[in-house]
Length: 330
Image 1: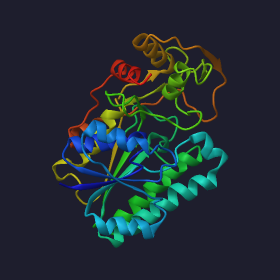
Image 2 (image 1 turned 90 degrees about the vertical axis):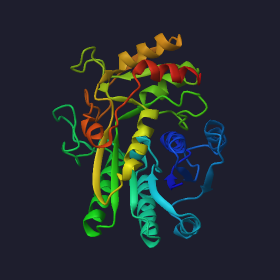
Image 3 (image 1 turned 135 degrees about the horizontal axis):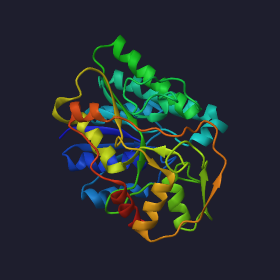
């Protein structure tokens, strides 16, 4: 059984990857400091997978501790999901974000190299793409004109990994550009549970449904879209997790760099998402329109054709399924 190290494996996307990896015959080994997740996620993962989950509470900037873990387990591939991810906080505290997200990645890559592990899947983001490009966005669309520290960091790490593959042909790097992951495992046992006020639409809707926030703020109502609200490409997190497995399967982790978009290829507006949530859960969500946020664009969605062609992967779940799964967590 191949060991897959997964940094941030107790977090939202990481934990769903753990389930998919386990289901597909891999042994996930979690590395997480629980700074943005909860230790009780481990027990929840064991409940879903019906397997003992190996995990280490570790800050991956600590190379000494990392090395001990790498010496203990033979790692086939590492999935790097760890990192702070609140866009708003990254604007207010850029040094904190650069220190945590970039320094930890360099520490990790050095440790991998020292232990002869040269396969990595990096959890990147659609935020690396430049604004105002023709849609759908493809893997060759322009990147780098990023608008906030969070996106800057994703772009910088992509560049580090690209340079690494150029300098050393042993490296096998896969960059997964996520669009807008939503929802949760169908059991409802693990879910998106951000600390503090969420940054993204669906977690905000959920917090309002749980009466933890009074009302939903919708930023902008006069975009040039079908209903005036912003359009994004929302992908069920289980589909996204399966995308990571697809990159691992069939000896696809060959040396070199590959980049993949993970989205549905369809855009849906804020009001469409809100309506679907209310229809499927039966919970009314009070909302108000407010000013657009700086840097927000009217719409973006991806072309996932490359992932389908090369990985035989495509999103299976629609918005209705996403909302029905969220309902189980309310």
